[in-house]
Amino acid sequence: MSNEIDLDARPVKTRKPWFLSLIGLLTMGGMIAMPFIAGEPGGDEMPDIVRYFGHFHPVILHLPIGIFVLVLFQELIAMFSRHKSARSIVPMFLGSASAVVAVILGFLLYQGGGFEGSELAEDHLWGGTIFACVAVFTFIVRAWTLSPTATQAPFRVFLLASVGVMSYASHDGASITHGKGYLTEYAPDSIRKLLGMEPKEKKEEKVVKPLEEQIVYVDIIQPILNKSCVKCHREEKSKGKFRMDTFELLVKGGKEGDGIEPGNALDSNIIFRAELPEDDDEHMPPEGKKDIEDHELLVVKWWIDQGADPLIKVGELELTDEIRDAIGKLDLTISPESEVEKEESDNPSDELLKTVTELGSEFPGGLTFESQESSNLTFTGVSLRKNLTDENFAKLGSVIHKMVSVDLSATGITDRSVALLAPAESLRMIRLNETGITDASIDTLVKLQNLESVNLFGTKVTDEGVKKLSALPNLKRLYLWQTDVSEEAITDLQKALPEVEIVTGI
Image 1: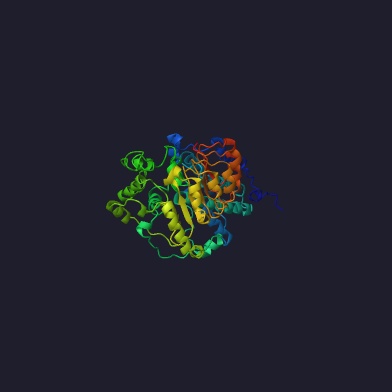
Image 2: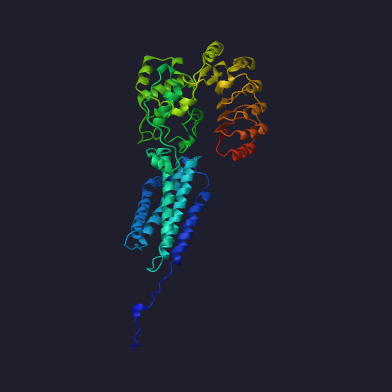
């Protein structure tokens, strides 16, 4: 019997990756703490060096995506074939390290990229951070499972989790860059069903409204802004704290003041910036973006000079041959209503048509139908100003129940007129700014459950009245400039309505 010892049979002592694990955990903690330490994004106030490095985020983020997809592909081959798992730590180190770098650069971009107030950008920030943390933890697990005898199940579980979180964060990133639904826009119905989405609507031929019936802002101006401006000035990304995706926010402007000055195009910020030389740093759109075309700019200036009314139609404004030609160069096609909307639409009755026509002499241009196929009404008393009193408004009593939009800005109405709106159950927007209404009007507004936008700027409403607005389930925007509402009440209301944009002018 031989007493020789088989040296190759002795177990090989391997060093445990404690140091790598500690560094990885500290890195995860640092990434999670980063947003809390830095606070709210600073936008244009951030140093140029922060904004410079932040712009490398879209370049680096593709590295971890490619590496993790490749490693997952290799593991799937190993699981379903005779190939052995490639137990190398290098790919996971490169993948997790590049994920950490991408998160840091993304955080710098978030701090200086004009994403203030964007829930989607914040979700993407945290989605990317969670992905990087899971990626680092997967790297740690890889380090502990390099032994030929170690099971690969934990590594594969965390690898799959990493790719899952990465996919979610990537979807948010694509939505910020290209708009919501970018990755799912052309998904076939089978995939949409798996994602819990509604089937894609069938394409229908587009129809064109007669020019005189076009609502200038909705059908002409907003499409121009969508094409050249809204990509950088919307909910997901508001450069300079300026959004241009709604009329109210377009007028409000951003850090540089009002966006437009109704009646004066030359003094409107969006026109001033658009007409700067293209090599000027303040020129908009910025270098690399498609400029607004001359005929488009001419139409926007025409609308602003004519008063920038969001509800007025082309036929109600002075239309020169030059403007007509400019509008003719635009694509004014609109999609028809969906089948569901068609079923729900109701053409106005002869009696309603007659009533609206008769009231038209009392309120010229003030009372109109929402569309040709709808019996819903919109009303604006802005042109009447203080001549619109409670007594005058009461004459609309027979049609108030059909109203979906009411603009009583700077008129002479009081709480008595607002009380008359109680039957308007479909009312979605109301402007009461600079009127004599008080908290008494809030009691009427809270009964109108379909309200989405309420403007109380310059009124006498107080904390006691405004807190009742938390009962409105569909409210999206609330304007409280120059009111007696305290900051504490606004804070409490924002907590009660976290999805509502409360505009205070601050």
